[in-house]
Every structure is written in C-alpha cells, then in structure tokens.
Length: 239
Image 1 (tube, rainbow, N blue to C red):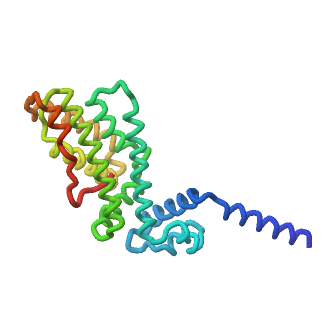
Image 2 (cartoon, rainbow, N blue to C red; image 1 turned 90 degrees about the vertical axis):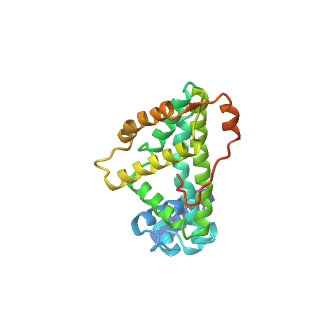
Image 3 (cartoon, rainbow, N blue to C red; image 1 turned 90 degrees about the horizontal axis):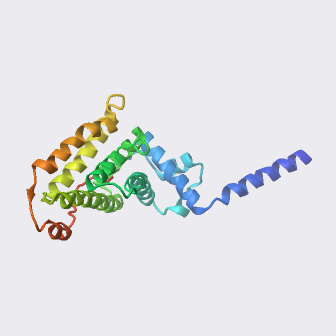
C-alpha cells in the first residue's frame, strides 16, 4: 500500500513539475516540434495534432500558446531566422573591421555551420514555398526578407562610401542574396560535395572585383545612398 501511495505521489510530482514549465519554454518546445515535423513530413502533412504528439503535449496545451497552426508556423519561421540573425550580429560586433571586411563577415556568417544544416535549409525552402499560398507565413516572410535585404544593402552602401564610388545598390544587393540562396541550394543537395564556407571563399574575391571594376566615381554618393529606399520585391526569399 505504501509503495502504491509513493508511486502516485511521485507521479503527481512529475506531472506538477511538467505542467509548471514557463510559457516561453512551452512555446519553444512547440516550435522545435514543428520544425522536426516539417523536416520529417513536409508542409502538406503537418497538423496541430501531429505537432502536439511530437512535443508530447495535448491539443489544448498547443492551442493555449498558439491559436492556429498558421501562428505556430509563423513563430517557427521567426525562430529559424533568428538563428542566422544572431550569427550575423555576432560577426559584425567587432569594431575594427573595414566595410569590405564587414560585408565578408556577414556573408560568411550566413553560411556558418552553427545555423546551417540540412534540416535547417530544408525547412527554409519549405517556408519559402508556403509563403506563396499562406498569408500569415507570407507576412512574416516579407518582414524578415525586408530586414535581411536592408542589412545587405547597408553593408554594400558602406563599402561604396568608403571607396568613393557610385554602385547599383539594387543589383549588387540582389546578387548577394542570390549568391547566398544558391550556396544553400548546392549544399542542401550535395552536403558531402559542397562546403558552404569554401564556396564563399571562392566567390567573395569576385564580389570584391565588382566593387573595383563595375563602379563609377560620384562625389555625391554619400547623400545618394542615404536617401535611396530599401526595395521590397514581391516573391523574395527570406533569411
């Protein structure tokens, strides 16, 4: 009888501890479970019930933190973006970098293994596809992409100002974004053959050559760059 009571007491204690997790911990558990489900099943098969099972939580617990599956998907997309954003922020924290070195550091951070793995890339491509049909995911995608594009554009602008040249900021920014996405694709399809950082090492000198050979001098560049708005092209892909 005593053993039975002790067992019940232990079970109640474990249940109580499990239920008292902070809301942010619960949300993170659900986001992680959503990420795993996306990688395993794709966007078509993922459901709230499947995510709840993966997280070991009830449907009621899921809906307590996220009202809809779309909200959960949007939160997962934000979380994935934040991983790379943290890496780029750390890479740019050094104060002794030149504008060109800052641009290189940013690009390299976007390709660093700390955030880049096969599941991460797969999930991001799934979200890029889902953004074409899901308004909630698309709104988050556009917000993230606008920020990402703006960061790249500012880095390119700083290089142009340092060198005293007038560059086509739109074209160079989009070229860098395409470069990053292209490397992600190659790496995700052939991880044993395509090392993201080695690919970047080969391509960055060409980017430096663009600043040297595709530019024309302009005394008013500083004002021009500062006043140029950041474009937000439809259908862009977020970080």
